[in-house]
Image (cartoon, rainbow, N blue to C red; front, side, top):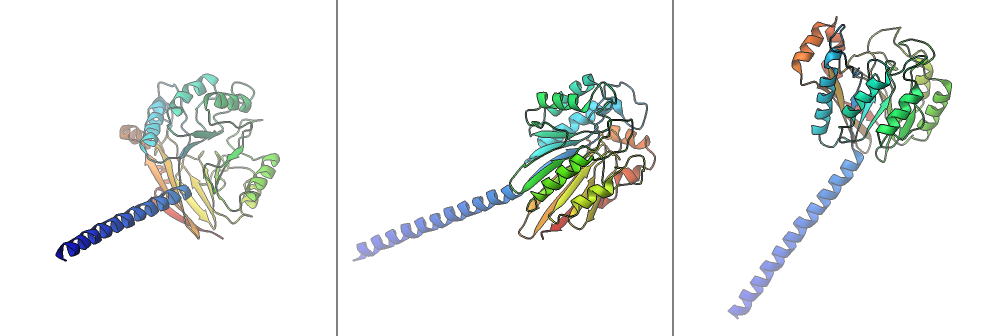
Length: 327
């Protein structure tokens, strides 16, 4: 009788152990599944603006062109050291002077990135009447970047389900100017893209901002109001990322977030890391300013610029969390 009881106790122990292990395994599977689902809803990217890459040996202005290669390489190394970056977007002025040779020297830096990278035009990237036209620039990018497959200067793609990236071309190419404009054909296309993406979180990239980080009539987009009228018709989460002003500023207007990012080659020598988290009723944007690790370069750049604080921005313009409610 005692042997049977011992046997039953032994069988009961192994049954409980097996059940416990199964519960632990099932919990692990559910946890991993939830993690995968969560990561599928999240997106991380880097915005690098106004690198102004140059082969200049000396600095003659507030742009430290002689160090442009160093700070660009540092930014790319930082990106490669950052986990789970889905893509990088260069928002214009990749090079300082619109020469094909300079673009060809910039590309090996960008191609060291371990994630896909894309670009929009800046006013320094394009030459009026020669050198680098938009079409030639586009052709060179397509031939040296396997992910850049677009046939026009403006384009869209989906980096993940539930996200839409829209890249705009606001560069005027029939006269020399630091102002921008988005032509009618592109505005109609933008409206159609937004109309098709009402359930998505939309990320718009262009060189010049639609909301100025600081007042500069000679740098703004000339048809800002017309462009914003189209964008603001849509009530899904929209974030707009730009450069050009070399200033650090974030402005939220209802469901639209305007993010101005500073230059790599002038103070504060920085770029943006953006992590987006989707929840049931809202989208959370965690936005960080990542500064160069060449602190001596940053210190010299600060000495070369008047009103450094307005380019560095307030605390909330550098590292902040923004929430856009889903409607």
